[in-house]
Length: 325
Image (cartoon, helix red, strand yellow):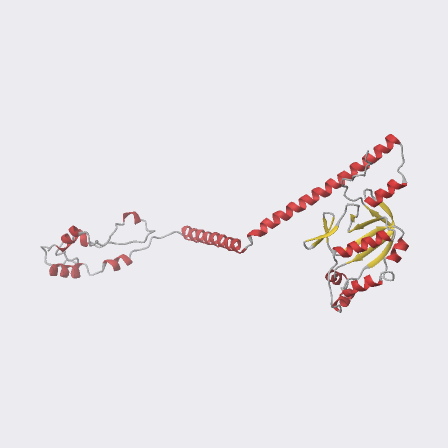
């Protein structure tokens, strides 16, 4: 008679010594895993129960375990067969993980970029946009005022039928309240760096100077005063008409004509006797001024024109003196 291939167990396995098959957290039977914790020193009742002498012989239990259960429970757990996943599930898992990594990386890069960016840059840009919008609004309102003033003059002329006197015309020219067209000159000057970018030959001459500076508001004021004293009837700088209430000043790093900022190169247009203005504003008559400009790396250029059109200046509140009664 052939022996039984499976040897009977000498002693039954108690529940407390039964091997526990531990599985991964993502296993299908994770919900059935029991918690196993070490006993605390304060749990006196549990310690006494564990230390209670067993009625069975421990040596016989050891022999029974070696004969009938030779495999360690942990080794038996490591031999568990993994759940078979389909190809779709395998690649779907990889795609999801890749997408999560991309999102996390993109969010991290945005966070680092935000930390490295200047928080005041957006505030400065907002202020710049507001200033540009206000300047555009002022320009548009000034144009509307000039148009309305022209309409008022036309309607007044129709009603009264009076023609403007020479004195009134001259006052309007001086105040810059009307647009004018006529012959004149154009003087162009630029900062040394801007001049070197515009003309290579000029940059070579600038490089030989030892006291290079930029054009200032005082330079423009001096040139405008010289043009008016030599017979100029109307003047504009970079398209901004010079009137009785128009200022030429420096604010920050810019030169302002009234409230409008201008940059190099500077173009000064003057209406008047073009031949006389060109002669009086040339290097022969203003040798000392041109020499000082040359030492600073500034080279004014004067050209004549048969027709120059200058728009009206920004209209302001003009008050006239009245006789005291």
